[in-house]
Image (cartoon, rainbow, N blue to C red; front, top):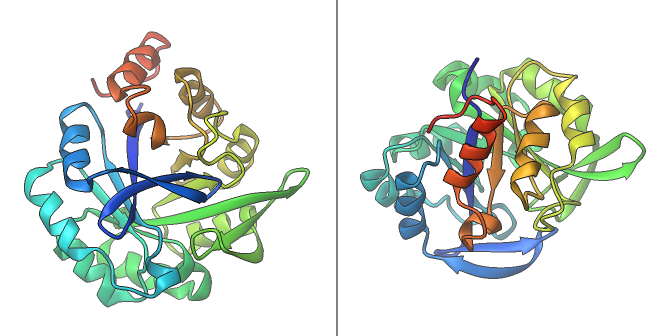
Length: 251
C-alpha cells in the first residue's frame, strides 16, 4: 500500500501565509519561508502553496517565493494560483516546484490539463476543485478563490479532469473550510467512487479522527492548514495516531 500523505497548505496573500473560514475573513498566519522549513523538518510529506488572490487580482505567480523555499526545503512542493498557460507552469517547475495546481484555468480552458500532462507528465498536474454543496449529493465548482459559481457539477468535472490527464485532485469543501468540523466525507466518498486518480482531502480538519475518516472515505492524502499553523496539532501527532490504526504513513 502507498503511504497516506499529510500535507500542510500555505494560502498566500501578498507575501504572508493567511487563513480564513469558508474562504473569507482572512487572518495572518506567518511567514511562508519559515513555515515551510518548520513543516519540512517536522514530518510533512509535501507542502502546497496556493496564491489565493493571484487569479482574482490578476497578478503573477509567486515565483520568487518558490525559488527561495526550494533552496532550503527538500520535500515535494505543489504551487497553485494565477496559472494561465503552459509558460506559467514551466516557470513554476523551473523555480523548484514538483507539481502545479490548477483551478480557475482548468475550468476556463480544460485543454490546458491535456497539454500540460503531455508536456510535463501526469504526475506534475493537480486539479484543485473548490466545491460547495447545493443539494443532496450535489456540489458545484467555484473558481476565483471561491468568488464565482461556475454551475458545473463537481463529479462531472472531476471525471473530465481525470480523462484529460490530471494526476491528482485537490478537493476542497468550501462549506467546511476553516471550520475544524471535519472533512466533508460525503463529498470525498462520492468523488472517490467516481474517479481512479488520488484525492487530497481539504477543508475542515480539526482533530486527528478527521484524518482517519477522510482516509476511510477515499482520500489518499489529507491537507491541513490552521490547525497546523497555530500548532493545535502537529503532523507527527496525526501520523502516530494513524499508524496505530494500521494506516500506512511515513514516520
